[in-house]
Image (cartoon, rainbow, N blue to C red; front, side, top):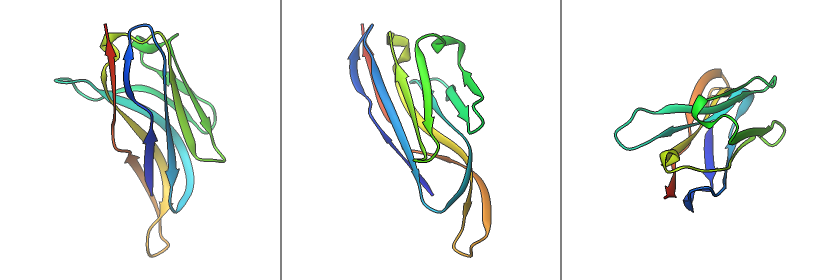
Length: 123
């Protein structure tokens, strides 16, 4: 099971950017998908998460500016980021809490991470 993220790059303050992520592999079910970020010298923090049931959670710093969405059938999660600020600069990581199957067909609950994608907001 793996996550592949798309998007990222350089954007000016006040601009917008969209990140997306797709889960692939032997997935039985996905409980939630989300995005975390880690700025230089700081700990990784939750940006937004969305459960399959529709429960959403946002960091206070992004409320009203970022929107998370999922396509459960396609196993994708997207993060629409508007009114970006220099303090949003970070490496963004896609995350999923799911149940997959290993090589022995055993169901395994796991939390997986995608490779980070860099978002840089210039002032």
